[in-house]
Length: 585
Image 1: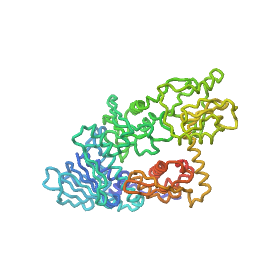
Image 2: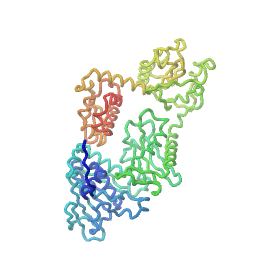
Image 3: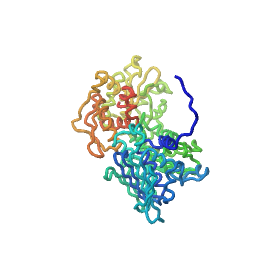
Image 4: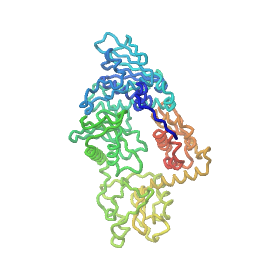
């Protein structure tokens, strides 16, 4: 290919603004986020968002802040013009939500934007049209109204990448919800097509802590509040406040993970790793914890000027913050499960740290490593060791008859027949009789099953030692193989064989889940899932893959919808069928 050298020249201002807009404005929700930041920086206590066509036709934000003087309105639309910072010292200790001075200029370059504002010293408001530059008198109370119409009208290629109106609306609602979670002193209202969609009222009479706690209940729901514990920590200049979900209610999705640094919603791998490390011993596989964490740190110890979208930050002492968060979350998680901690018993002498259901094990993953006993069977009788009852400090988990039958079925699929396993619907936490009459077999890679522990684990032996297998992970593998077999028997166009539910399984869904189900309805049909809206806030699962007929349809639907939301249609096409079948399993 022949290249031709062009002379170096300056880009026109309009093109510069559109390039900057590509970093700041990704979709209507990006505009909502930037305008909300400006409204909060202006001291607003009442913010109203009005949308049309999911924000593609109209985004209007009204606030009761201190407004913009008429003489400064034209300057507000210029690139790198801001009232937030003045010098390098201000940039290194940002205390406001916005500071770059790019948002309004970037939005104006890809839309039809107008600003109407009034200060408490003005007799009336003034309206500025960004396209024509015309400034004229207007009527409104003290505060500012910014209208953004026909987003991406000047860049039609960008507009083609937008999703359906329902999907874009869901993202806009999420943007407001994230701000509402951190500012309980502000009233947020969302109107779509002239109808009130969401509203969170401020709680001025409550203490800041009580108001924030109630706002969390309103936004994230009472279920999260009941299934989480309060976190509070003061470590030097760092203050941590929030709530962390119990391990028992971990999810397959990351939609209930909210992190704020000095009031700013961020995504940070360092902090996510610290929280995940705190859950490491109590979460199974790819289960995701739920939490909302507010980090208050001196502004000079954190750099927020990392990305134009302002969702990434850097910490001056990341290691200290990592340790503080990990220890704080670990301490909170230790309290609710303290009664389940088993005192040292005979099991620990065999090289198994714990036989309780909270034990984290990876024995049933792709590489099944045996756990070799530290003592030989001749020194301590095997049956004696396994038959000792748990100590008083251990509370056996409640195992339902259905879970017991599932565990036994899974065990029999992986091992030799378990002649000594109980066949009743109320299994004992630890099987007390070892199968000593059957010699160890070399034909079974995982050896011979000795017993079932709490209906959750299988204890087996082979020539190398003992193996503890998580039957939940093993059962996932069985389901995966069934799905692969079912997929191989069906054509790509026909999809997986499905089983219709006699009574549809309904569940409360977010705007994002509803929009995703509608947008990817055809793809879901190929996977044997029929998910349709039952109302403005609920979905119904009407069919599921026949190979997964015994699984919970709601959990399956939510997991698949979360994958579609996270990766989008393009990633769906790229991923192999095996990956998606593994996700469903």
